[in-house]
Image (cartoon, rainbow over the protein chains, first blue to last red):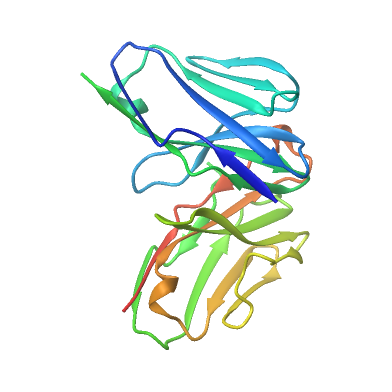
Length: 108
Length: 115
């Protein structure tokens, strides 16, 4: 089976940097995905790491260490619109197994 | 602007009634997923189809839930009979097997309330 751990809540001010950590235990692993979900909305894809290292996409970056079963999502230059839930998810062949999500609240 | 569509967006029903949720995946996508989201359990995979064939429904209560893809443009999730514990948001997602980043595209969801 799969188990993922990520913090439940993070609060930060506009312009700040937030790092959301995700540790996982899994019987099979192809890669680690991150999804964003605004309140009342659908999850939307942010990033995917199959190999160790940092992937950068604009203000968001994602990191993976396969040997440590660990990854993180880095949100830079926080904006009010970044207030949302962020889910890490282990991808295994076809299946995404989601963590419980981290609620990020951005304050002015 | 290709997107996954789901109907209905909201459904309120009484315990014991049948509920059918529909999903139109993005044209050309060959994988379809049904997820359920609740505060307590988070996002759970209920069923997975590839090229319209059901490959994984291990997350679905078999006694009352059923999922089908009658054609490539329609996936259905049926609950019969419905129970209050089925109250949740049900998401359909589609993607491409071995697609870029294995991205799944989620529909807007059906918010189900069973009284």
